[in-house]
Image (cartoon, rainbow, N blue to C red; front, top):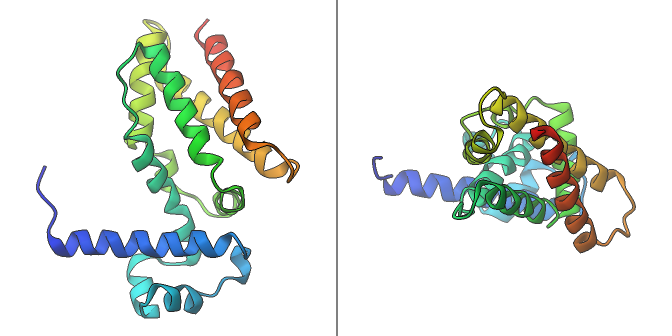
Amino acid sequence: MAQKTSRQLQAEETKRSIFLIVADIMKAKNIEDIKIRDICERAGISVGTFYNYFPSKEAAILYSAREMDDLLSQVKMDGTPRENVKKFIKSYYNIAGEGIEVLKQVMACRLKYYDEHYYNENRPMFRMLHDQIEVLAGEGQDSKKLTWHILFFCQGCQYNLCAGSPDIDISIWRSEQIEYTMGYIEYLLN
């Protein structure tokens, strides 16, 4: 793989910085109330620079899927396939539960705008999970279909978190979702 140039690295850092500022603003404001000019002021960039990286503020929010992929691709798959899947699921829910207000707006953007990246089977997180499920599923089962079922199940759990009580204990929620998801995976594999 070719090394990235300093310009490419700077561009990635600027894009990430914009996303982090949007995520921070979303903790206090709904996406409808966020102005691109406010984002640019906080990022120290021009409006034109913002549009070089993202076509809209919603696209900046959906960029979080790529950030999540980066975090999940760092999960060490060094156990048995079953242990690795559980470790992956645990990391998935840990990342998802870190900012409920941001997660709510990401989910809203996904409902309103098609997120091509989310449905890409070449995403690092999809490949990592799929590789483990393929080993667990064995011959005769469609491991890609099983992987999608698991990811959609996890997304449904996230949706329920977003739609649920604001007083939810996130640590209890995470533990329950890991167990529910692992039970669902066992059901799918049988």
